[in-house]
Length: 443
Image 1 (tube, rainbow, N blue to C red):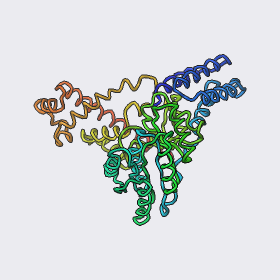
Image 2 (tube, helix red, strand yellow; image 1 turned 90 degrees about the vertical axis):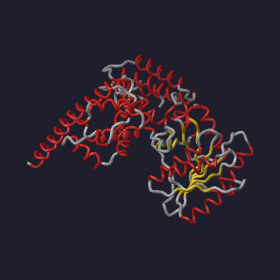
Image 3 (cartoon, one colour; image 1 turned 60 degrees about the horizontal axis):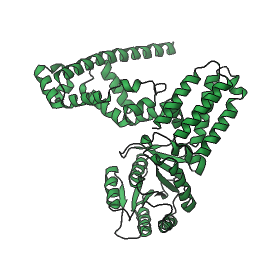
Image 4 (cartoon, helix red, strand yellow; image 1 turned 30 degrees about the vertical axis):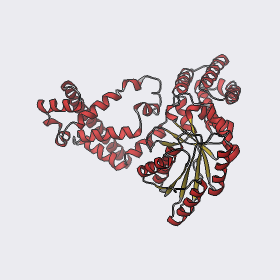
């Protein structure tokens, strides 16, 4: 995400962050580079000017120039300014308690991804223990209702829809059903509309008045850059937005929308869409995004993703398997699948401090991992549990089934054997260290 901007600023931070001494010229040159990078990222001109002026004023002060570590102080200054630009503290949904009904109204242009986002948001809230009801109030786009029904089934969430032509009537019916069936959150998917379309904007106002939502969220395509900011301003003037959800955030190489929305509209970005799958919705944390933009990684998000795919008990069982040489190809297949749930290799590498822009992500062969997964899938369960029984004939069959060669199968099995030996040593060393520390602590 924000690849172009992150690449330029990350390189700059690495250059200046390691300097033991910096001059006013160093700072001016760096800030000029930042200014160019922000403008190329389609950030609003007024936002860029404000950012540059404030950063210049503070960077040329005694705190940076006379610091023991001026390079690091300058990086810290830019990080703080970037966090402020992105909205400061993260702001979640202002939902009422589970015993009270909360309504979330989604609005936006046609094609911004409202319907998919509605289902993603419902799945996200269901994972937090809430009981959401999706409302199909987009009666303009053909098959919009059916699309939401299908997505609702995938997310395991009920969808309210009616065979009528008035979306306000659908919303009122949904609210009545929610009260009767004790749904604590109602998510209303509305039809896409241009901010200049007076009739449709008036309809949106009527829907808002009927729903009395606690959240009115604009769903905007991050790829539209500064246009997303203009759209947010227009919708806010009519229905009073409480926040923004940026879709296609993982595809936005520029970052203009993310870096301009809060400063220009005063409305926080609450979520970002990353990927097409229903679990591809992330809470927006300004401090984490700023850290990624400046090439400083995002360890907190990485840990959260890892925890979401593996419980602590599972991690301990995996460590025991490695230590006792009972780690199998089935276990390796399971780890590949868990990694895929965390996202692409590139997205994971972005979160590891110091790796972004070093070329380390290019050294990891993601296609090679897919071939290895295909090799494992072409094995029988007995072979996965005991790779030692895989002789020449079996290797030929596995190569044919996986679309690879016998050479690749042989190489993979050797790699697996070496991995098991290495992980066994690492696991035993960590256990030995833990025992020593516990003995020292008890003495």
